[in-house]
Length: 299
Image (cartoon, rainbow, N blue to C red; front, side):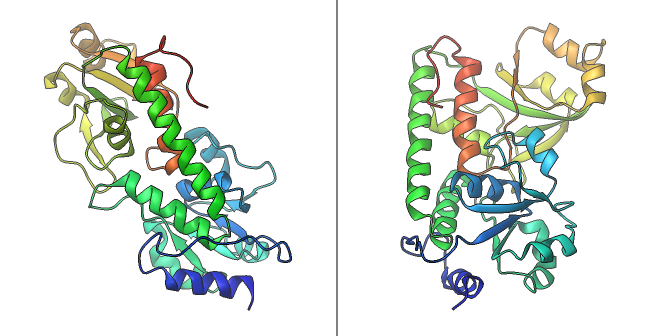
């Protein structure tokens, strides 16, 4: 049986994520080659030491996701929602990693290779639980079960280190993670977001209690921040250049800061729709931002 057929059979056998047993690497067979149209699964593949040969919007991944870094030889596949099918075909992958935005193109993509879909962000609002299952399922498919368990154990270590650092400060203020869409609008992350799931795991209280979409955010005008609770606002970078240029000028944002109720802290990029590597990175960054003197993170 070919690697591609074996992977396709493995996907068919997954009645729920993580349902298969541990895979075993076989030195007599080359590692399966993987391409990713989804950044969360691309990051998981890198962490699993899979043979990742192509990623959609490779340079944007480096700006928005950051870590884990892509191998330098990874090919550019075009847009995440409209990949270069000729390049995909030429790479002859054994597996294509996709998300819900690619589902309409699944029949065409599966003429190239079997597809594995990102099931982390759902209306059930359990991203870490789903990310753990996704890690194990992908590890099983790619004969990387041991790497998957090591990755999850390392994430747990980083969660605990962040929790201890934050507990040492005795802080009680809720946190409000946001990212700028433009100079007047924000994505505010709440129930179902990676940020809220991680925050609760490390002992923090989320501030946003209003409705969110299945990806865990709501898009609001800056004025919505003016009637919020006393909290720490964490601005997740990168901020669009047009928004950055206007934030120092008099307006709603400077009025919000001047009101003095909310501390505003800039946080380095972490992919808001990420996997377990993003969750662990988020824990590190929360501790770095809110407990800067609480010791180094677990790395």
